[in-house]
Length: 167
Image (cartoon, rainbow, N blue to C red; front, side, top):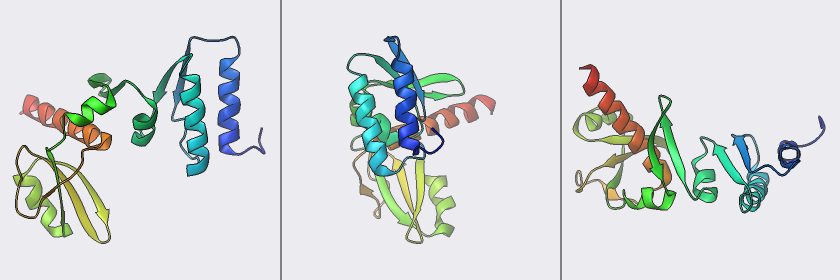
């Protein structure tokens, strides 16, 4: 097995797991380290297996959850803090996620005024996602909510609740 690619080793592991016709398979970060083509092949394999076996997928790769999971849960601090169908969780955020790009020095002021759920450096500027019922300001544009936004919004809410509880 030492000469096999990561994807081949993963498939071999799944084949081993399927010996004895289990009703449940748990996979942890199964596509981490795989190239995009191998990741697609492996996800297709998991989806096919999932038609006849319960597959529990533990991963931080949000696209894998979106592609594979009919139901999901977000864990924080060892507790389930959100659960449901990915599509429904995303739909609950539609129309509430706003984006703008700011210079690095403007980020902290933005955090003070708005519920920033995520930031990402892109082309030298910081792209910010904010959760708000209405447009937070003139430079913000609405964006399609994603499962990543659900994840960040959920964790952001958990942090605010923890901060309020300790204050």
